[in-house]
Length: 292
Image 1 (cartoon, helix red, strand yellow):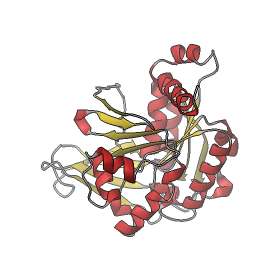
Image 2 (image 1 turned 60 degrees about the vertical axis):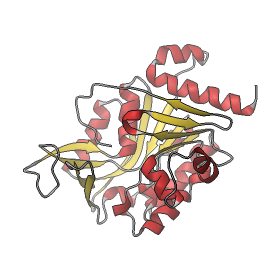
Image 3 (image 1 turned 135 degrees about the vertical axis):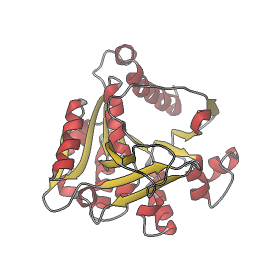
Image 4 (image 1 turned 135 degrees about the horizontal axis):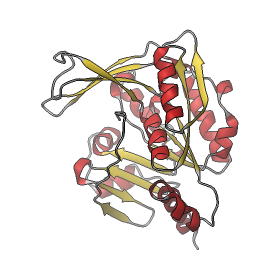
């Protein structure tokens, strides 16, 4: 079996575990479920109590747990997989609430650290009537930005089969150094590196800084998930539906899988030798509203 085929088979086993852990265990020789370790931000999203309004027009807001890496950790666990989360929360009511939500969802939270001086991050999020999303963040700085390399729980990183992360944790120090160190530890232990850039331009000092930061770790990832808006941003305005653009500018030699989400149309994905289109409908009933 070629190296590429072996990589794809391993990725397929890991993804299958989320859908059917028992079947995936049989496929993988009966070994225990693979641990997916997620790194980055967890925060409180405040969403309007009515839809289709701007933040200024919202009559009231409802709090909801959020943060893309934390969403993935909870999602993996709810689908029957094994997950852990590494990050930093404020030693406040919101931070303790988020930590409890991880525990309630059977996510290993031993990698959580609490900051006595910084608050848990807050974000106000809405989808306006014109279809545009609107964000307002409160991170000046928030606790997630202050995680240090010395606070990393390395034994979890050494156990990871998949290490998943975004780009928000790359924006400022000391979290950026902690992020890069965590990637290095997980990779050296044989983990697959999974990257969702999750562009939030308002959090970066400039568009140039965002592009440079997001691309600074691009070539390290084994799996990358992006959307069409991010393709436009990262390629300088090129057509996100042009396969040649995606392959030439975004598919690097070490990449095993590049997934492009297309909203209600599903997604397309690229491997080293093939382009695939995949339409999917995926629904999981969630008692709390996780906003991604």
